[in-house]
Each structure stands twice: as C-alpha cells, then as structure tokens.
Amino acid sequence: MADALQLREVSAHYGPARALDSVSLRVAPGEVATLVGRNGAGKTTLLRCVMGLHRTTTGRIALAGREITGLAAHRRARLGLGQVPDDRGIYHSLSVKEHLTLPHTDRGRGWSLERIHDTFPLLAERRRTPAAKLSGGEQQLLALARVLRMGSTVMLCDEPSEGLAPVMVQRVGEVLREAKTHGVAVLLVEQNLRFAATVADRHYLLDRGRVVESLDNSAVRDREHELLDRLGL
Ligand code: ATP
Image (cartoon, rainbow, N blue to C red; front, side):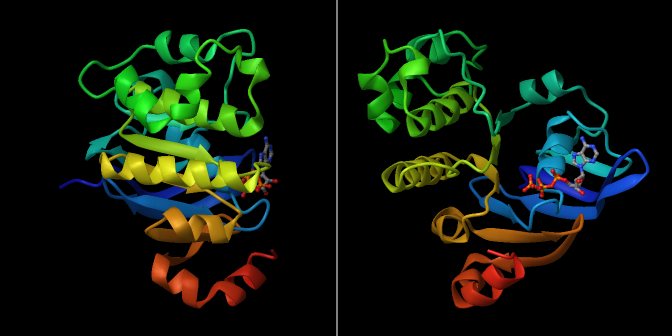
C-alpha cells in the first residue's frame, strides 16, 4: 500500500536562507510520526510546505502516492490533507455544533456526527456552547474533531499538547490513537517527548532543517535522557 504521506528531498527557503534541507520522510496509513527538534529546526516550515502554504524549492511531496508538490492548499485539503493549526483555527462566535456541521464534509470519508460524538463525548455535551467559552483543551479537541469530520486521511498537528492540562493532554492522545485505528495518518510536531512517545510509531529528529535521525518509538523510550538533552529540553 502507498504511504499516506511521503516527502522526498524537500528543501525550502525564506529569501536566501535555507529552512529545510533535503528532507525525506514517510507516514503510513494508521501511523503517527512526530517531528521533534529545537526551536528554529524547521518543524513548522515543514508542515506549511506539506499543506501548500509555503513553497518548496526542490523535492517532491506525495499524498497516497499522488504527487501534490505544485497544488494549491485548498486542492490538497480536498485530497484528504487536514491541518490542526497551532492557533486551532477556531471561530469564537460559532458553537461547537456549527464548527462540526458547517465545513465541507466528504460523505465517503468524513466521520459522521455520531462517530464524532462517540469519540468526543465532551463535545457532544457542549454542542450548543460558543467556542469562545471552551477551555484550551476543549478547543484543541474541537479542532481535531473538525479535521476528522472533513474526512482527512492525513492530519498535520502543530503541538497539540502545548499549554494543556495533563488530563486534556491524555484526552488528545486518546483521540489520536482512535484516529489511527481508523487508518488516519498523523504527522505531529511535538516538543513534549513523553507525550509523543505515548502516541507515535516513529520520530524524525530535525536539526537546522535536516532530518538527522529517524527512530522507532521503542528507541525513544530507551534513549529518553540523551534525546531530551539533544533537543535542549
Ligand atoms: P519553533 O519550534 O520555534 O516554531 P520550528 O522548528 O517550527 O521552530 P521554523 O519556524 O520552521 O522552526 O523555522 C525554521 C527556520 O526558518 C528558522 O531559522 C527561522 O528563523 C526561519 N524562519 C521561520 N519563519 C520565517 C519567516 N517568516 N521569515 C524568515 N525566516 C523564517
């Protein structure tokens, strides 16, 4: 089966400055891969290149075996690429239900409201609540739910655990594991290595725009101290 997402030797620049240097990585369907690295390593730039929000200079990006390198962001979204941005992309005046019913949903792939409510009972309870009244953790869950509702087969998440209470971090982890069981592939930027190790199958270490190591999750557990040190955490 084709990888859900594949990058081959992708480079990207800001003016003359190189932010990504020949990055190759892959995420299989139902797999979670993380991007870890110090501040400025290129993690957000990589997500933006995959989403079509930043132009790649060289290299190729493929979604389920189909090349998307030159496509506009909205066309990538239609092909199954979903982004949970770091600001969560929430509209404060809309209710939880409106967030889950207004976006274009793919009837074949998109999760039904019933399945969303089963996976996110908290959102079912709060369906009439305006998003402005949700906690940060609840907003994060809503952002994840919206991407699944739209039928994304590949989810890009930028630090979903950041600033959340431990119980909500745990909930986000449960949702990502549930998404995996439905074949969704996840590429996760995550500074919290302990959390990442509870959901990920594989980790890519980025340093100054290059993938310097690709590790199985078991290796992360064994080398936690060394890795935290390398990441400056
Ligand atoms: P952080 O964890 O701090 O968000 P990151 O790993 O996501 O870091 P990026 O934000 O992708 O890293 O930045 C990669 C490199 O590109 C850095 O050297 C950064 O200074 C540079 N960079 C990022 N955004 C811009 C921009 N808009 N203009 C110029 N340079 C930028």
